[in-house]
Image 1 (cartoon, rainbow, N blue to C red):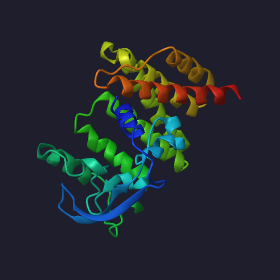
Image 2: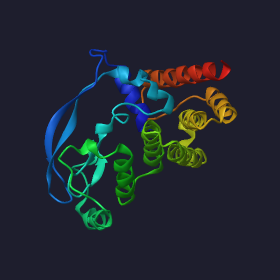
Image 3: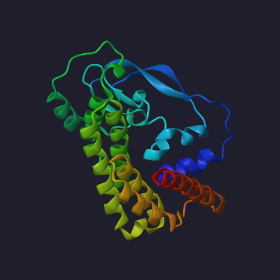
Length: 242
């Protein structure tokens, strides 16, 4: 999966900084053309893969509220890296959806719009963009994280349940045989956050017996990937045994 590919790549980099930083930029909304102030990623290091969010199997910058842009006028919302890459063929459908919302223009700081609402808009936007199961499994883990942070525990649980359902569907696909270790970690992690400790333990033990395989990775990268997953599973099992 792409998330683990990123982990593998950044795990090979030296840790030069111990902070994450953003820089101010101005960008034009691809849907309505309004210019707004945003933040772009400026710096980070491989240490982000040791942040506590690893237990939800999501990583900075997805845990940062600045990662979802929202136009101050039409409230078009998506992740920072998708803002300029929306196909023109989808613009009309997106405009119709945004026109159905009850909106007001903000002062230009997109992050004054609650992250939970930006993610809700983004969820609907991404429906027009033919995203795959991996994307949606990750999206709902991210949504669960931010909803929980805002104290919306019921909605956070609903998002995490969606992530579980998607991952379990992915587990049934033959083409995902090599990434079952990662998928069982994901289902176990979401069950852990939902309070299903027995379900989590079952999935973690299944994951422990597996080896992560990915034809796009060389031998060393695969070793790093499996070590990362195994260490995370060991951490979880220790938590469950306490």
